[in-house]
Amino acid sequence: MRLVSVVGARPQFVKAAVVSRALRAAGIEERLVHTGQHYDSLMSDVFFSEFDLPVPYRNLGVGSCSHAVQTGEMMIRLEPVVYDCEPDGVVVYGDTNSTLAAALVAAKLCVPVIHVEAGLRSFDRSMPEEVNRVLADRVSDLLLAPTSDAARQLRSEGVTAPVEVVGDVMVDLALETLRRLPAKPAILGRFKLRSKAFALATIHRASNTDDTVVFARLIAGLRSTQMTIVFPVHPRTLALCKTLNVGSGDNIITCEPLGYADMLALQTHARVVLTDSGGVQKEAVTVGTPVVTMRDRTEWTQTLDEGWNVLAGNDPREIADAAQRMPPKRRIYPYGQGDSARLIVEAIRTHVPRTKRMASCAS
Ligand code: UD1
Image (cartoon, rainbow, N blue to C red; front, side, top):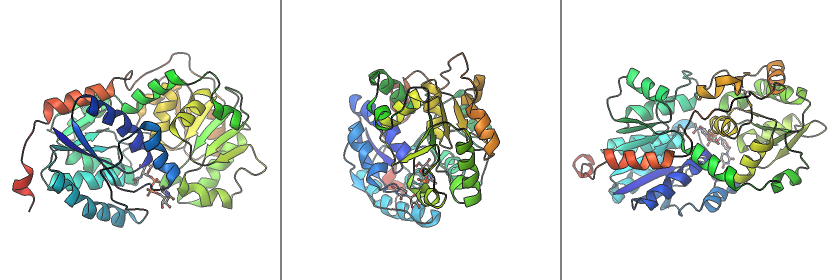
């Protein structure tokens, strides 16, 4: 069996790392294509070396542009690659523009689309990610859902293609990395932090970074926690941080985007994590650190169980209050215990038999 996997943005490198390794171990040939959506070394290259990901078979070199141009360029450049590879399936991850572009290209070439992280919904169509995930699910031939709620959602939308509940691959990597973390990770020393005496923040969603007023409210919330906060800044957030002097004369330590192991170490040792990222919400809960989500909704609703995650929107007061709460007593593992990659490979083996449908519908 030969698969093409398409990645382009930071969280997809994390997910692909685990699945790629499991595919290799199962003797399945994989050609990894990088769309180039994330291109800064600290947003892309570091993950390839840190995870020992295979060198991409192709890098499509599509950088930053409007949604339509970015998605369209990816489709134009990806189509001949998929065509030439004659794969038995195309694997797409999550909800980015790279996900949608790859799903559409494969579907139009009649190559089975395998969607990892299917069925999640925020029910907010103003989010580009929601549009991407709904459409990717519609054209997918194998839908790999992280939870039974996500699988139910797909059924309720009339999906008839196979749906398998496989947990979340990000949990596989988080638990594996957690086991290997030293007792005193070097990153704590770099920022002179004591375990459980600081917070960690990330902000990159369009809804939080396209409007300076909204971003200023989030920063006001972070400042009024009065905790030392480490804030690795996503490239799209950099200019706003400069405008608001984030990190000068306040409780916030800004830094460049960090590698995976450093991020996981900070999530593990933080007293609380404040974020608008989907991946970080899950990772923090998995390693047992409470989360404040700076959005009105989350697709990862199970993180809210027992109070591990609290939705604070962009209200400075709610953000600061939620950050002060005590951690819940009972740990939760709503997205599996680290066996997701194995279940994904099993599902692919079962549902993606070798077919030669492509040639007949490619012209
Ligand atoms: C994308 C995904 C989001 C995912 C996030 C992880 C979409 C619609 N959104 O958002 O689901 O959670 O990645 O980071 O696909 N930029 C750089 N260097 C880079 C990458 C981006 O400078 O390496 C800047 C560009 O100026 C660009 C902006 O960041 O305009 C946004 O990048 P884009 O790839 O559109 O989306 P993300 O916000 O990263």
